[in-house]
Structure formats: structure tokens, C-alpha cells
Length: 118
Image 1 (cartoon, one colour):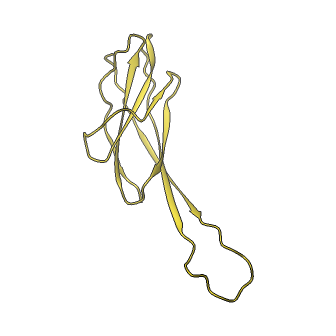
Image 2 (tube, rainbow, N blue to C red; image 1 turned 135 degrees about the vertical axis):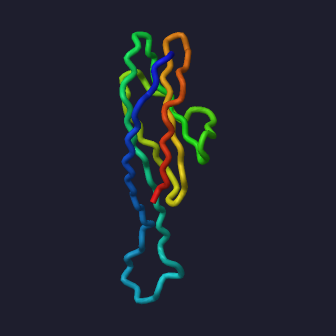
């Protein structure tokens, strides 16, 4: 496949989930404060591939530029966005997208998107 994914747009959303607190009305302080777990996600989009034999897209994530392992997701040809969830706050991430055809040929990596989750 010769065409490339040309654009990735990033939106970062942060959800904060607090551990439940007991509300028993006791004036005795708890042994420890409830733990807070911050989770983040990155939503990005790309331009649709227009080749007639497009079978879908593969999403890759790395923690260093140019260092990608196996795809983290395989999406249908109708997809033009992906939300990567469970990202650690303060950590850098790198994402690329590829298109693949019905014969299994995978195109080149898109431009790399780098983001540090706030």
C-alpha cells in the first residue's frame, strides 16, 4: 500500500477515579486517605485511506520515538479515529497508524504523534 495516513489530531482527556470513602460518621480519622488513581486517554484522528482494497488500520504505541512493538489495535476500514486509554500521567507516548490492504500488505508508518500526558 502506497498511501499514508496523513494527519493525526490529539485530544487528551483525564478521568480521575477516587476510591470510595466510608461515610459512617465516625469522628475517628481513617488510617489512610483514599487512594486516587488518575487515568488518561488520547484520542486521535487521521484522513481516510482511499485505496479500493483497504482492509483496515493498525495502531502502534511506543514509549520512545521510533520504538514500536506489535499493534495495540486493528481497526476496520471505516475507522478514522482511535482512543488510546489507560495512559500514565506524566509519561511520554508515541503513536503511529498504518493502513493495510486485503492481501495483508501494510503501508508505511504515518507521521509520528508524540504526547506527554499532563
